[in-house]
Length: 212
Image: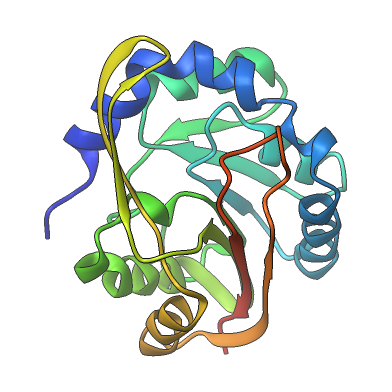
């Protein structure tokens, strides 16, 4: 399996500070995302550790923690982990690869993966989802978000800095199919229009699923 490390680190390490400035407070402008995260928090609260996978500067880790969830963050980019630790000194963050998580089977009560699987090529999505399922406890929850579409957007420059990063867009039916192959039980599938002036102008998909 080709791991994500070289390309994704090349994409996020150089722009970790700029990314944090742009997105750390984004949930203030996204009421739909807050409402969905509130419901996710209600489902996983008290179930054990909950991972914000692909945590970036830690805004979702922090949001879940403030709602009584035992949340921690994992990101592939060491620079992003450093920023997350600085912005959220009371919370735990670590570097890790979602394709090979350093967690035992059934270790976590939940996973929030907001715009992290968008850096996984289509042929590897099911294997990544199976890895996420492995580390979830029985009845654990997975909440995914992603850009809707069928294109792959490549960035070679971001905030004036050279990067190497692909953003893979998925249809709702496509991602539901992948999750079925990985033996998740789908609970909710929703989409929304982009918040104008707040985020990239793509429709957004969200899937809540459980490990039977």
